[in-house]
Image 1 (cartoon, helix red, strand yellow):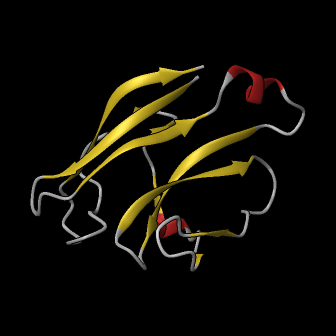
Image 2 (cartoon, helix red, strand yellow; image 1 turned 180 degrees about the horizontal axis):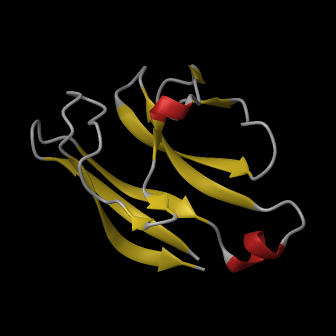
Length: 110
């Protein structure tokens, strides 16, 4: 099951919506399990949902805004779903860099 999230920064009023995190039941049932993770797109100062396959190298993807290659670095990944639960607050904002970015669940997808 996945979440559809909105993001908002309390420091600079950055906003983003419709961000997908996780996977559908069909995707979980596949042999090659895939999921969606959120990454910083530094070229356009935005958050982007990226489909990754677990246990495989990260894919080569482009920024949805400008089509430049998107660097999927560990420090650019928003760690929201963790083994200890979800961390929705205190993430670095893609626009201003302040740790004031919060994600809020809006819906689920299956």
